[in-house]
Image (cartoon, rainbow, N blue to C red; front, side, top):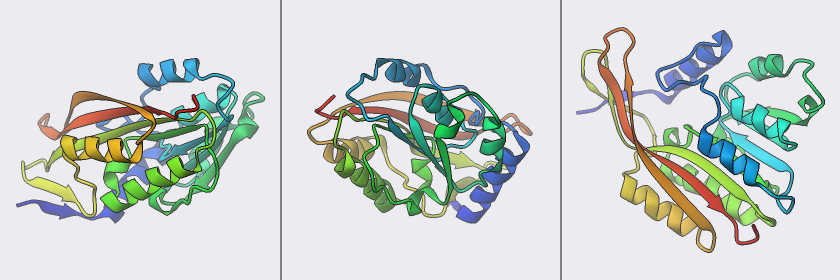
Length: 224
């Protein structure tokens, strides 16, 4: 039987980690991935120079997008203070970042974003909110749009004592179910899904505390 973990406690954990600049088991402070870097370098002039970073965390993807010339709306439930401190008086790209403090599931997508990023955040939402967000982003797409998603599926969590855990209201997709969702939502687009095994160890015990299959989705609109 799974022990429930409150969503409020998860929010509090990440607020504290971001405020202290602390890394986490999933490597919250990691640099942008090679797949994302390759995608960013390949984006042409037909793509609107607007971007949405859902659950920006430490801000690395937000900063990379801004440096690449995008106006970035950066959304997260953590206070904007840490991201603003990272931006500081940085180069001419700093003014392109617009932080928004709110839950990802409460953010309403109302414009055409050339790039949408959701890195390691959607699995915390319930399935209705995940699908509603992605459908809205697709519905707003007008130009040559690119969506980059990193989503954990088939998740197993364990406490330090080995007890199974489950976060209240999380999506809990199986890999097959998530693939079907992507194929339905991105109908007419060109979605590619890259699968990889992922595991995290508890720093106190050295035991595996999290196992999942990571789905990295790169979806390109027909206009691209």
